[in-house]
Image 1 (cartoon, one colour):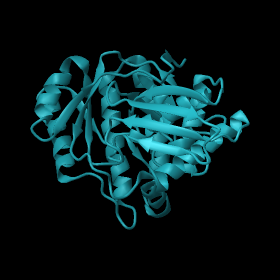
Image 2 (tube, one colour):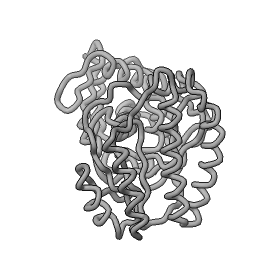
Image 3 (tube, one colour):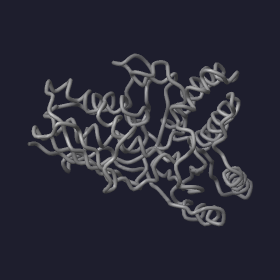
Length: 322
């Protein structure tokens, strides 16, 4: 019996991943850029036990069945294939971010699972290899292997991984939690429907590739204003292409729109902030760390807010993965 524990944090994409070129390998149609949050950690323990006849997955104290258990077992099969063993495992995970609410719970979850499972099964994987492995469970998990800012490359199975990216050290995010409940349409189903039916999808792919290069350059050059403009515009484009699917999918609620408007009003008043939102109603404001409490105070009239500085990368057995 062997055991390993890992801790990972969610990330919020500034340039979004939306759409896959290969669903089996979770290969994105375009690259993306994100910031790992210093809040909402997921802690996962994997115990490899030869007495088990089937994998067991316990999330926040409750044994899981159905899709969550099946996804976990499929992921463990990948790890077992690399390790050359058929031994089953017990997975216990404690998740502090609301699940399936558009706050990247799966990114933290599968990054932590990748680290703990690889260690428990005796694999010695580099950060890049762990990023590729985590991607197979949830695409955005590839980015949560790294702290701070990360760039996830599109490409084939070997080439699609994330890596750290230099970025302005003074940035922060203010998370405005509009609804912590589980969304009705999963990101996987929404991506499939968007790619299959939205007339704007081809333009989303080509424009996002250009935005990613501009955002990467803004990060490296420390151009906060340009990075913020690109972040907000990319989020609005993503939600537009999703809404154009048939049947239409709308993740943003009236409160979400009001938060985008409030952030724009803050900029007009001289408080620099830029809004973004993943596949859910919750809105995140990118701002300078020195302004984060002021931004949180302004948005707090519309939703519960949490201030997040750039967070750490994956930690396995008490050691940071590098």
